Amino acid sequence: MARFIYRLQKVFELRERRKKEQEQRVIEAQKRVREAEMAIEEKKTEIRDIQKNMLASPHTLMAAHDSFLHHLNGQLELLQVSLEQAKAALSYERQLLIKAQADLEALIKHKEKAREEWLEEEKKLEMKRLDEVAGQRYFRAQFEKAEDEALEALLLEEASES
Image 1 (cartoon, rainbow, N blue to C red):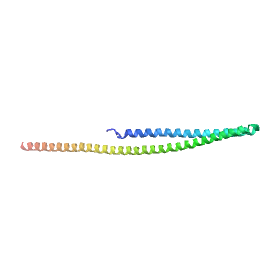
Image 2 (spheres, rainbow, N blue to C red):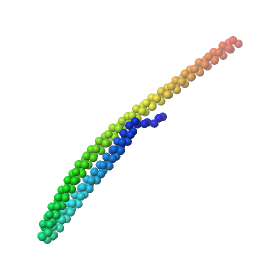
Image 3 (cartoon, one colour):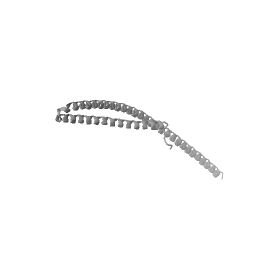
Image 4 (tube, rainbow, N blue to C red):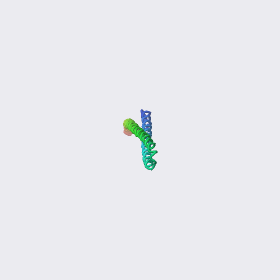
């Protein structure tokens, strides 16, 4: 029996590869979101530590602590903006992954349908071959039966003559 060959196999492999690449991009985007969240937590911890130290420090350093806290809050805002950008990028990459999965699923269904059609065609060809063999056997048996009958008739005719 011949082997099934999918005519769109190259396209199928390309879509599989695109899906895997997109999965990697989603993983990288998730990693960037986690890194941004960790950076925000570290900055918040640093701000809390400075605020605690500010209470125990002399009043002459209050202005310096205050300006440094203002600087840290600015950095925190920038980190929050970068977190929002990372989340937006993650959402976009997920949408692309969903599209890649849908494209691959459509091709998988097409491949399965093509395989089923191929199997049906193979079954039809096999049945045609079997019918042909059965027909040949039938005609050969009929031919042999006719030969046997002719031989018997000949033998009977010879026996009746003698």
